[in-house]
Image (cartoon, rainbow, N blue to C red):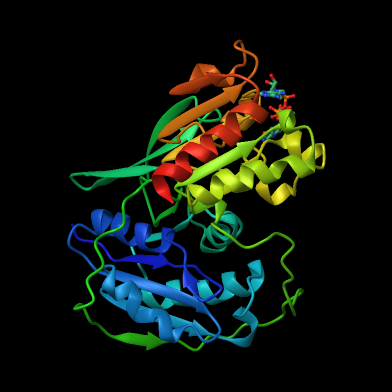
Amino acid sequence: MSKKVLVVSEIRDGEYRNISFEAIAAAKQMADGGEIVGVLLGKSVSEHAKEMVHFGADRVITVEHDHLSHYTPEGYTQALHSVVEQEKPDGLLMGHTSIGRDLAPKLASRLKSGLVSDVVSLEVAGEEVIFTRPIYSGKAFEKVVVSDGLLFATLRPNNIAALEKDESLSSTVESLDVEIKDLQTIIKEVVKNTASGVDLSEASVIVAGGRGMKGEENFKILDELAEVLNGAVGASRGACDAEYCDYALQIGQTGKVVTPDLYIAVGLSGAIQHVAGMSNSKVIVAINKDPEAEIFQIADYGIVGDLFDVIPKLTAEFKKVLV
Ligand code: FAD
């Protein structure tokens, strides 16, 4: 049976996050020929609506409000709840991003719905949609079927390929007025404390440093390698705890979960809590001076050596080929 599926997209600094388009592709699978409705929340977001159509949304609803200019769980939950009440969808998808992880459970509780979080793939078998999600810090996968009610899921970025962009597609864009009231928090301004660059959770290449980096100043050799590869720099909690870098870079169970095409783990041991955030990377390269380091157990390629020797050589070689 065909289904109506809402896809909540995310725009940051005027640009879509890829997960918005990946979620449309997932929704197409789920909808089984039904309707995909893109949802854009924010302030002055309507100008971006047609991009969702180019990636496969049949229709887009924009909700613009002063209280949506910055994400707040209360404001976004109220707005999205209004959209769900109006549309009465069969399915609802959003990214398993910082916002999605915060917003989805709150909305699910308000809708008295279940929620399947951190989905990495889905398949349709007859009437059922089967969601696959990692469990036990990525050591196993479980398949989940929603037996009743809304098919509500968050999707891990970088796991489901977006559809080809087709600029010839066009459709209607509707705006919905919502009431947002009784907010306990209003965000006036967001000040970033990390340098802008490639977004860690959507990067296709990540160079991550651990405690073996031995100092904040040494992270610049990772910056150089990441720049040549057009990637992002990440870190273990060991490196963050040692104040070599900001916690915004932390990857793992209590940090970001990433799925790049290439993950270069540098001077980090591969503790289970770190591996939980990166084990689904497509190709893992580990550089560690200890041949017994656990990270080598999940690495596709390993270099046993001193990172201060290996990294500059790698950067120089990649420069010859790529720059
Ligand atoms: P270490 O374990 O100290 O490893 C450093 C590595 O660098 C060693 O393998 C060493 O051989 C190598 N090395 C040293 N010098 C060099 C050199 N010159 N060249 C090459 N290699 C070198 N950790 C996370 O990363 N993310 C999380 O989200 C996370 N969440 C946690 C949640 C909980 C509840 C707990 C209890 C822990 C969590 N941790 C997390 C911490 C985790 O258990 C580890 O302590 C941490 O990952 C270790 O960081 P590290 O690998 O950088 O440091």
